[in-house]
Length: 333
Image (cartoon, rainbow, N blue to C red; front, side, top):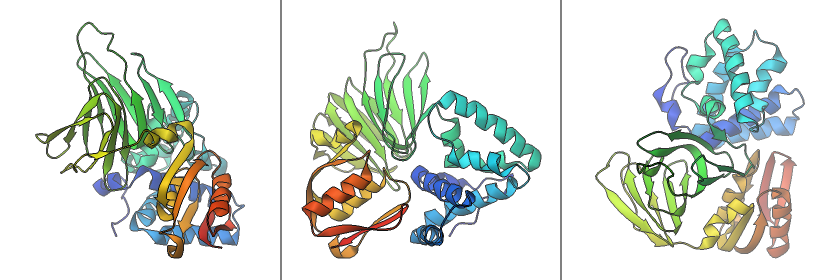
């Protein structure tokens, strides 16, 4: 396990902690800070921390931050972890003001600068867990942000660039209104996607990324092998890492159903269904290995995950077991 980030010398490995993991750690810490957490919720938090090394790393980074806020009013410190994702400009001003106080009490800003919490607070656009948001850029391009997604927008004389920090986005590009052509690119951890007049999605998971093209085509380059270029056309998708690109495969239009707040399952493994639904739900959602390979088809809400869990129990011999609101396991009925 990597050591916690030290003050004044951020650990470069902290950038490898997925955004959704840091966000989940913040949600758990906010719940425990509230003073209202039950014993079951404390146990659920401990279980989540032990489930993956990244979870514990994110938790320890936030513990360091917590220590640097000990001299602040508790209600103010808690605000860093609990503030909603709406009104991005106002939030960034508030966050800068709070981090200014943090510098006075010990320099917590240095520790957070390379973590997901800092990036999310300072990003141009972001969504909280469970939220889906659509924005329109100055050139007319429309972008839909999935749950726990963070992006920056950089438009200049040379290019139109989207920096995907975490999560998933669906993009419908618009013609460039500038007199000089500026390519539209999405830069992520694993590579660069250049749009060729198109509608496409880019998703960044813990260990890899995925491109799905619904209209037009894109050029894909990896971060560490920029000479490796693949053109992906309409109806095609590919998984890629910073070093390699997998062969293209066929995709369905339903791959973008999340932008409408629904999960369209087509003969999907229950384990995969739970993993996808869990991206839109706060807390810990697990699947009992005994039912992992059952198959489910149907349309499920991403905005009301409790209703989706109830609906899958009507279709299959499974049932959601709620230890707490934030700790749920789907298991055999």
